[in-house]
Image (cartoon, rainbow, N blue to C red; front, side, top):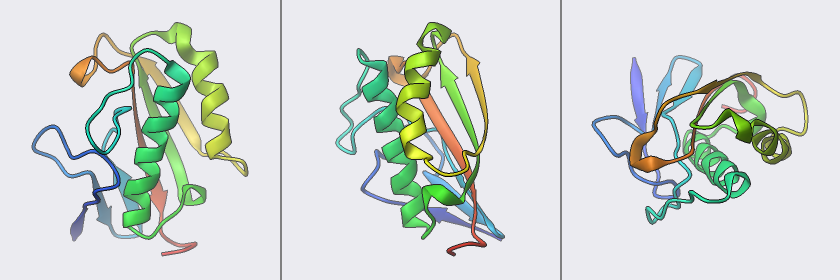
Length: 128
């Protein structure tokens, strides 16, 4: 059984998908672009873009009653791997404890010309 997660604290989906899904003891966020809830996209500053994508991930998780500490896996999609160091610097502040497992891959392009997209998987056992 699955349940869609919706929040107005993150931008709406730009296609036929949910912002997130609860399934069993897991919460899966869709990839979050660096867009403010109003839809304004951050493109120029990769550190600010990373923080905004992660704030969107946090908002979707919060709507499912889980926290960033519950995240067990993150996937980051970058259009330029040269941004890797700056992304890491912005990212580490969101996971001060034991960081989740993570993958980071370079892609040719992302929706709306975004430089980064971040998705996460969280486990409900601690707080849910």
